[in-house]
Length: 136
Image (tube, rainbow, N blue to C red):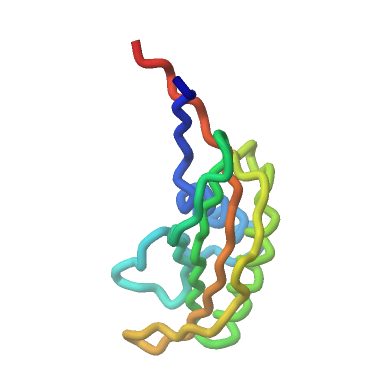
């Protein structure tokens, strides 16, 4: 019987990394997988939108990254720093993430409810899974 491999939650791994990295870079914004309520002027939302397992131990999830800003300039700056930091994730704190590829560059995507400035881009992150303990 083949080994049972479980993969980590890609959006949570990336959100945890980005919270720390953005704060260290001078952008202490909320980062999560849902739009907060109440919605702050500036935050980053990550959402898995697909991707596929590459081999027995590698998952390659595709993540949408949405960056809201208080104005166009802040949304742009937050997007650019988030993009740069995300492309530098491999090896962070021994995380299972070991490769990142951009699959869709930044594009303007104003919030449909408020018209607030928002930009989005997409990445694929290679994540290493772990073997489940054998079931007796």
